[in-house]
Amino acid sequence: MQEIRLLAVAGSQRVGSFNQRLLDRAASLAREAGVEVTQIRLSDFPLPLYTPQAEASGFPEVASELKALFARHDGFLIASPEYNGSVSAALKNALDWVSRPTGAEEGTAFSAFRGKVAGIMSASPGPFGGIRGLQHLRQILGTLHTLVVTEQVVVPFADKAFDGDVLLDGPPAQFLPVLVRRVIQLAPISA
Ligand SMILES: Cc1cc2nc3c(=O)[nH]c(=O)nc-3n(C[C@H](O)[C@H](O)[C@H](O)COP(=O)(O)O)c2cc1C
Image 1 (cartoon, rainbow, N blue to C red):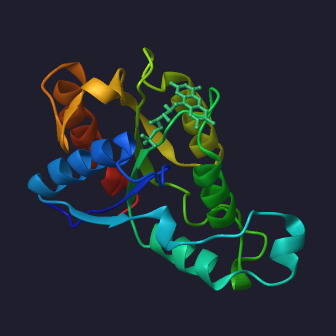
Image 2 (image 1 turned 90 degrees about the vertical axis):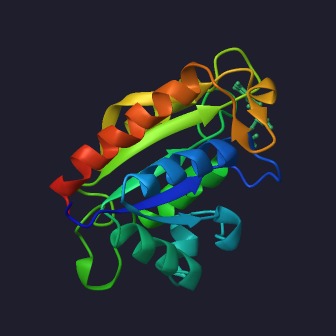
């Protein structure tokens, strides 16, 4: 198989995050399929809030590092909590910083995202599992010219869906390998 590199990131920094646990399972499945996966935590990238003023006063080193990571991967596995019907502010802020042109690519938009593939997922203690936030995430990534695969996974009642870190058997556990397989199938478009 062509060498495929996926970046896995969750939009929650909460200790014990359901989304992080879901993402960890997706990353394991991708590795089992022979793909190289880099797992990062947004808490390791303490980004300032994106504003044009913050950007104008110097592109933060930590944003450059995060952008470089996105740039050197062929696709993304992203788990986002749903906050008030949308993605978490932490995830949106990270995507906003990474979307910005830097240095010689001034004027070239979305270089770290363009032509890439993403698989998206969400977990929530609520009955809808974060599906409204995923609609927004799909739209955001599409705007960045990343192809978001049709398959997606939501974990409703997430407080009862895990035994420790293990995603219990049920529809999310059954659909997750389908999502991961689809991302791996399509990721070579950018490799
Ligand atoms: C500000 C805020 C807004 C929230 N809005 C929603 C929501 O719209 N839908 C939902 O299902 N859960 C919502 N929740 C509950 C989250 O789904 C829950 O906190 C979940 O555990 C977050 O994911 P995590 O476990 O990965 O941190 C919200 C939580 C917070 C703090």
